[in-house]
Image (cartoon, rainbow over all chains, first blue to last red; front, top):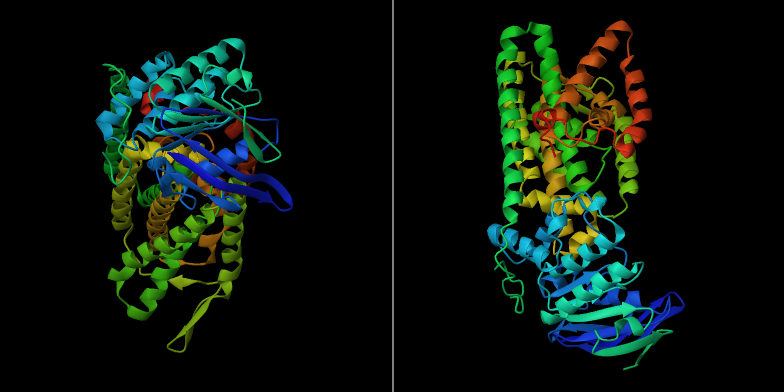
Amino acid sequence: MLKLKGISKQFNSLVVLKEVNLDLRKGEVIGLCGPNGSGKSTLLRIISGFERPTCGKVFLDDRDVTKLAVERRVELGLSFAFQIPRPFARLTVYENILLGCMLRYGKEEAMERAGQLLKTFDLESLADRKAENLSQGELKLLELCRSLSTEPDYVLLDEPYAALDKENTRKVRRMLRKMKGMGVGMLVTAHRTKILEGLADEIFWIELGRIGRVK
Amino acid sequence: MKGDVRVSSGYGGYGGYEGYERYEKRIKKERKILLTEFSILALLLLIAPFISGFYILWLVTLGIIYSIYTLAWNCMETMVGRTSLGHAIPFGSAGYLAAILLLYTQNSLLLPIAWLFAGFISGLLLFVLSLSRDRVAFVFVTFLIGAAIWILSPLFTITEGGSIYGGEEGFSLPSVEISTIYGIAALLLLASFLFFGIFRTSLIGLKFRSVRDDERAAKIVGVKVNRIKAYCSLISAIVTALAGGLYSLQFSHVSPEVFSIHIALFPFIATIFFRNSEMGSIAGSFILVFASNYLNSIFPQLHLLLYAILLILSPLVRRSGSFKGRFSIGSIRGGGN
């Protein structure tokens, strides 16, 4: 279980998060909604290790990971998909995925797994294209696919639907359902609760750093 | 399963996809191109001493040494995305350290140890500077430290046996026959060529290139970014120091000029047009060495004008990607990456 205990974050005098508690189980999807600047992304950055909380702790399967580096948390089964995709621009789509697969597997198996992951998410046709040549929608799909390449138990998805047209929103939704079907625990942020309906098991609203259950 | 990483649970097979064979084929093709280039380079290096007079051989040796330097420098730029303008530090300090060691011990067998040590210390410095994610700051800080050492190095003197060594004049090194230096430099160039080429096309190299593209994203796929930076800084600085040591030996002398801006900028300028391949780095270095030599024969220091023009052009060429393609046998055949 991914567990947040009393997470608070303060930037100088600005309080961004106040005593946030949250539990995420494997296979469960939790939606986290709120307006701009409500602290959604900060919370995900704290869980993933890019940011340190002012106080509070992050537990991953009962292990305190609050002070661990990002890479170590990834090894322990946590993954993250950025709101604005951050692909390895000069590598191919296949290589982007392969890198994550190399964390847990040797050369041959990692190469096979990367190909299989692309097939599962219908990205085979993009495999040999450099990431810098992809459209915004394709980059988003790559970002999501890459977040699974390390075979995580929990994935943090920062606004996966942001800046997408209808067609790509549909593709992303389909992809997230597949991820859920694989038994991955997901914490998904969004502006509106409606977009997460049908996907999230629980939805929380975050505003002024405080979190409350919606559904 | 690797190391002490978590054992994955919910990920079974996804089906019998064999698409990775395409990737393997591409890597095999790149390696084939690399080996072809290596063979051509080896052949050229083998016949050069037989068809060149003393002066041309001396120039070719200089070109080889600069090529090793450029290859090592380029490793930092193309593998971890760090443009160093401070590589004159390992290049120059290798010669200096060797000369000082020789002054006290008179034992020339210690020269390679001095070069390696200078490379190691400079590598540590580059690594510490690369820890910040600010890549522009890295360019400026390496440049400033390099320039400071260049300015301060004439003040460095040693008194031994009643004589003063160092200062503007620098230190003397033993005179070694050009054919010997050529042989050592040629072997080092071939080894560097093969090492950097295989490294670039390997899965380990892929991890390095992920750091080049995006450090944060690299962390998210489990790449240990700081370890990668440490390895790259050390490899790059040590190979640069070996080149710098040979450079000082070729001139039988080392002076503050080895830290000059001209030395610091050389690999940057040599790789302006073709920086994505080992052959490109070598071609760029040779062209620059021979062009500089020709220009200097017309008017002293005229090569600086060439440097200035290329530096002015560099933002245009590097950003527009006009020459982004690999300069390699493969690209000439249309099979490059």
